[in-house]
Image 1 (cartoon, rainbow, N blue to C red):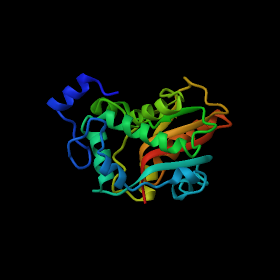
Image 2: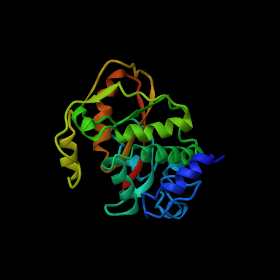
Image 3: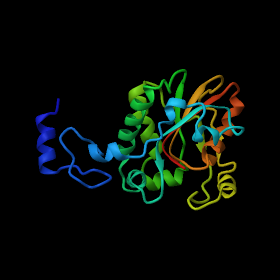
Image 4: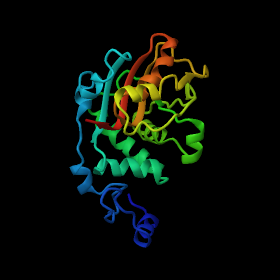
Length: 230
């Protein structure tokens, strides 16, 4: 039920769709219905164990399943969403999109058997500059649907050389090599963890983050993101 105050605030200062900029309706949030319907969904969650995204991790980490909500291309509508989330101080976009993705993925049983969520961490300096971790914002939306706990202190990023944008696969792997380490603050032994990120391109960042976690023993990994590059 939409409150009187929400209606009044929307009348005075209406929210706009993050994609097209159109005024959002009373029951809309972040995205207008029209844009939401036309975004390029992957439908990977229906075949989470074997799809183009899951195959990027085969032979690299012990992957259980993987899925992204949308296909991502530079300059696309999806890229506008991610840009607003990461660079325009809009963590609420991540929570909304994570919530939406989780609701759609849950219908395919994507979260069955998962014990906890680990958002891909940012380097401390980068998180201070941004004010938040966009992957953690997405994870909060997922947790709101699934009830799974979010663990942010199991692994940390200890280095950030430069952005992965415009790098080849080999350059991406080298750029994040040894960039993460276990903190020892949370036991991951025999856990099935869900790694959450905003965008998956080559999978290099996820793999680099997971590799030190494997020392826990018995680790199983699933991966979820808002976007995946074709």
